[in-house]
Image (cartoon, rainbow, N blue to C red):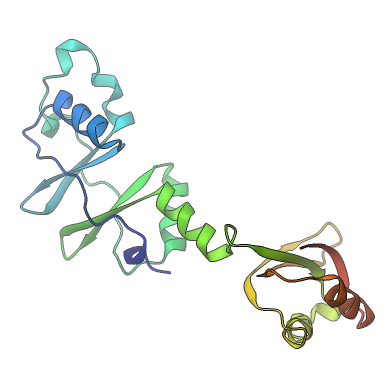
Length: 197
């Protein structure tokens, strides 16, 4: 999944000659927390709700953004993966990333957009069933083949390692009854930890 498929393309922007007060009003009007500062579609800075907090006193509200904006903010390319965007947001403890292509601002992606992408990827909001299994001999292919034989359609697979060092696979499927499938997997020597229909 690429950033370009999840970013906001109709970005609200501001110019560097506008004031802190004008930026705050614009953010409030559009219910946003990140405001790219641009000149001729080129990103020159960024202001955020939190970066403007120190300027909320009356004598500082009239400061031009060029004096208070974040210069050289962390940006991302539209072709970058959502995983990398999430990693950057986590690493730098920020709420969003301007998306820049060939020097021009083309979008913005926020924590909310990334969360939406991961929810879609994991199929969490779809009606689904889940099977948690430790494959015999770590043979996930055998488990997946059995799911296919029983008519199961896989939405996503996650994996974790338990305290015994065994890989536990969390397999989300399109909604289906799982008791028969779980019994069949157990008969083949796989350990079904849980299933949720």
